[in-house]
Length: 314
Image 1 (cartoon, rainbow, N blue to C red):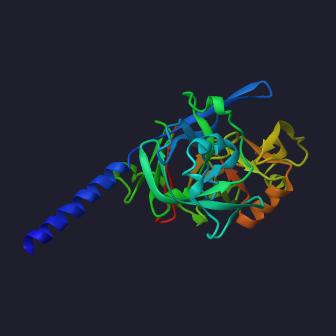
Image 2: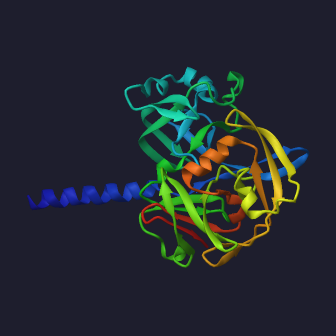
């Protein structure tokens, strides 16, 4: 009996070590794009993705402003036609997920690998009639194909370290000592979304940290912009295009108040805002004044402590 217990203990320890070995640094890439004749080198953050054992070069956009990791049906269709086992996991008995009113169901018990780190037995939303179509002739090329969104549901209960200096991220159960001197602030987390208190002027306001917002440092809506900029200043059109299937125009204005994160001044001189009523509604529902983007921290290390509701910058 004694030896049996010892073997059981060794089995548990071995599996624990193997589980830890699976948790490796996840590499990510910045993607650039030319907009209105100007090249923006950091428009989106993508992570290499493997779905089950499909032998394709896929990727997903890291969007910590989303709530649920998802696969776009239109983009994934040519791959699923070759390997239908993934779509066969669709479970319509689970409560549906809604994306901008679009009803979606989950692929149940899916195995997903981000770079070299595996997330097993996950429920991943399949968004119908969504995403850019990918030609069947190109599915085997070396170019990565965007097929979905990586959301913070994968990181709950962990401490997420995003090392923007080295383009990598990793989750930990406990905060490593080398990150303990980061400038931490208590945050509000709802549905995985991180709401950060900032001092802007003489008032504390909350903004959501959103890696899906890469074009500006602070993105307000057409109502909150009035609180922090000169009403007499004419806004300058920044860009227009489509986001989640909607036409949207963004504008620039000078920020007339300084911004601080836990007594550390943030280098923000211009702010953006959209012309969308939906953004006004979203900010009201989330009790924020806008979004703060990752480009502001591109030479920093960001720590998101989902266990203790803290946000840190090193």
